[in-house]
Length: 352
Ligand code: PEP
Ligand code: MN
Image (cartoon, rainbow, N blue to C red):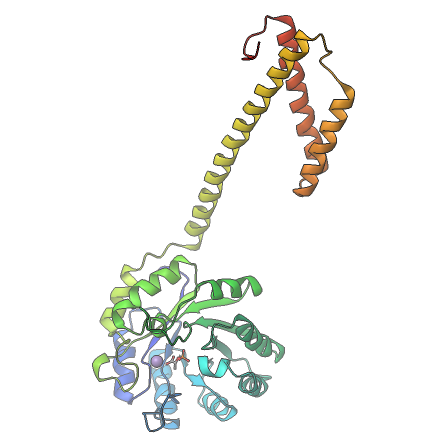
């Protein structure tokens, strides 16, 4: 369905029953999923809420993996979780936002993962702390985990606002600067908090060149045991994928070049306008020199102007050879303009 190289992950917030998992996997058979998600252990805010089906759900997911040829993944928060998912043949897992917020926990996970070939997704911490996210990723890399993917799921806020979690897009963008080769995918479900907003957040992530999406998909969202408001049906999810404006990497790159070229054209025009203004002043000086019988070429003035020009270009970190060549051309043109004035009658000097 998707012709792009985006990593698409979908599945329910929580694994509730084998039938529920199978219903989603079945309806998404036509989608080229990178992985199929479902929470087995759920980190709940209040005690007594549904905390996931636990280990039994791992066996369901293992069966889904086998039947549909999908890579399954779930959230891990301690070394027992890691041992359990590995024992059930999972190749991927994700570290949840609450866990990333705690360096002790991330270190425990990193230590348990040493020597494995697992792909580890790490969500941003709940608080907008880029360094904590970076630190978590560093702990994984230091433990020798090569396949790390960051997941942007937004940041908690006390204020009531449009989305459940603030996107603060500048944070994942800054993360990309820290790790240029790291893949970053977006979890629009946890940012949105509402099914109706999942599409717009997904489109924003695609426009910002995220490497993929992790979306919560449930066969009956209104009956979901967790995150009921933000889950979408498999049909809605397929619809979302069809409607996303996904441009190929090549098209995005070309667009970027087009934009840069357009900006260069604007600057080139400005350079010409500045040259024209400079030559206008040169003309005024030429007229003055002619009136006052002053020689066109003034060596001291040339050296002084050249030194200033070179200093400006040094400050702007431009090559000195380039600056010297440009200045020679400007100076030559200035002399030519003034020579013409000396040969002809004064013309454009308004003061004459
Ligand atoms: C989830 O993906 O269901 C989940 C609990 O996510 P987060 O850690 O982003 O809150
Ligand atoms: Mn959820």
